[in-house]
View 1 (tube, rainbow, N blue to C red):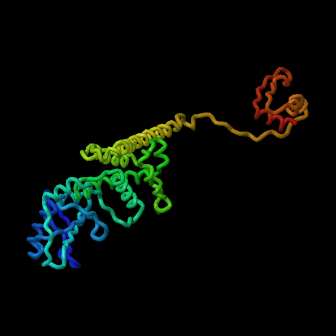
View 2: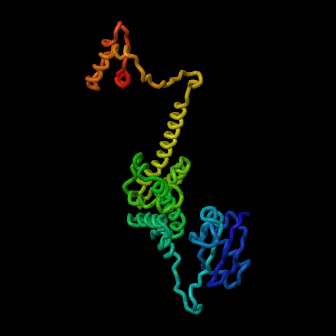
View 3: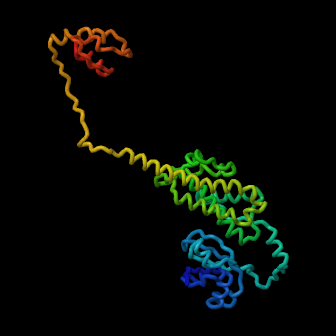
Amino acid sequence: MPIIHLIIKHKNSILFDEGTPVDEHVTIDDFFTAFAIDRLEPVLWDVDFEVHFGNRKIGNKEKVGKRCKVYEASKIYGIFVEIKIIDPNNNPNKEQPLINAFDLLMRSSTTLYLPGFNLIPRNALDQLKIDVANLIKDNGGGWFGKDIAENVGKKFVTDLANAIWYVDIRGFDTFNEQHKVPILFEIFFGRANPSNYKNAHPKFDFDNLQALSRKLMNYSELSWMNNQRFRWLKESFIKYASDLSSYSNYLLNQRVRISENRKSLTPIVDESLAGSIEIMKPNVWRTPCIIKKYHLLSNAIEIAEFWKPIDANLFCPDGNKIMLNLYGIFYLLDHVK
């Protein structure tokens, strides 16, 4: 059986803090009821409680609804499970108002809820999650049922914020050049300042982009995404998810092209068998006969404009034909005199 680390708190006391096995199919509510009867005092068998899951024993944890399965929640949020027993009133003799169960169900089925996040964000990514949740709220979106909002809704907001943050921290401009980010999401970019991070600026990765795209596209098939309250979001959401996949393919094609270009630069001729050029030092000593023989060419080069070609054959005695390019002309002008 799977193992979770269970922590049970009541008021200022820790009643339990150990690893314990859990059935894969049991809900949080049923698990606590059975555990309380087995381990806790009778006065705590039928109490209200809150449950939080996390990856670490100490630190922030995610609140999870009691109807969720323990094992599934532990796979998503972490194996550290903290149950806080709620003391509704310090005066046990005070009469509690009766709640009509039908009214409670009706209210839950018609009231839209939004996932809750820390009021004081720890960093820019936390603030981004809050802003995405506020965008949903401002446009009339939400989920019916508080538990659904705190589980499905929070997961959705977190995944969307992570997908936006992934692009922002690696280079929004380069991504935006290939795929224009939906106007609805533009306000969420430009928050990841590379100077705030010790490590080098991370790069885009094909596998990560594909994974983010698939994760977002899965939401597009859910019933609530096709509801009227999310219609304003769906088109932009699907475009961004699709663009993540397209950009990963673009990067893969670029990688293949660069690899092919590098291969094309590999020499196909054995350099040891190829010809070679040896640069000789100029012969600065010239006989008077040579100077006299080419003095007409030397004079023509001296008075000619540098951009105009010269037919050196016109100045060659005895019908000797030579060919001069521009570099040869300047070399000749420098050495024939």
